[in-house]
Image (cartoon, rainbow, N blue to C red; front, side, top):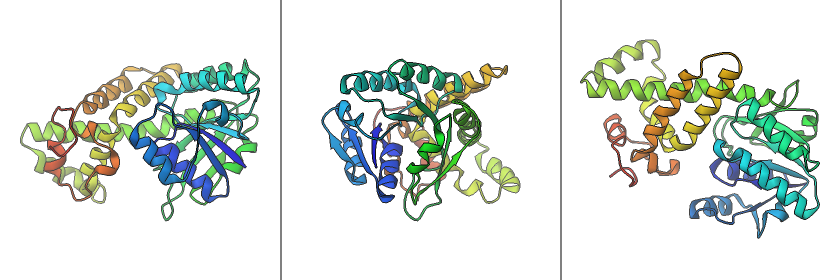
Length: 293
């Protein structure tokens, strides 16, 4: 089995490594990608090809890109497939609204490509970690059960394209939206001199979670630029469901603000696990250099 990977960032490379652990060959093109992405792909043992056309010769092609790039990635896949004369089954594992993934499916359908809707829940897969959950939906979703690996758990949902993405919008609104709420609350408490009292009070309700809240918030801040776009997709999904979009437009604004901080310019793997609450909050100072200063 050969899997073509479009998007070899932190999540994409980790998924690629997990598929390799399951016996697949994973190919990707790194043209124009950063030094960090090249390092992640090399560490994952991915096969690097010179052009995206070669990625489209795989049995299955998987798109794992930032939410804002999902439509552009679909157009690029369609163009490359047309040049290569191939029509692989494509899985979109991006964090986008159901209406967005249905639009992506339309782009690919024009060149004879079927799409499976997918979503990822949890941390990037790794050996020894709780399996990363992958959800799939669409007519051909059962065919993608082959992308299971020792480090992932694949669930096929009933329903058409859009069902897996809808689930992602709901779970991400809780997991990542909660990080934004905690971030804003901690920074507001700090600015008003009541941080210790705030943490002591909320620890009564969440005694197991509060001690690591600052590290959760710091990790979210390192991904804030991508999270802001994901929150806008959640706002779109909620608006499509007849709900106010303003709630998650606000969460997107919070992450966009965090993206401009020193933590926002730091790679997740550079976070020291021993960072204190004070050190993390200081990392939200504006700046384009890495944290700590």
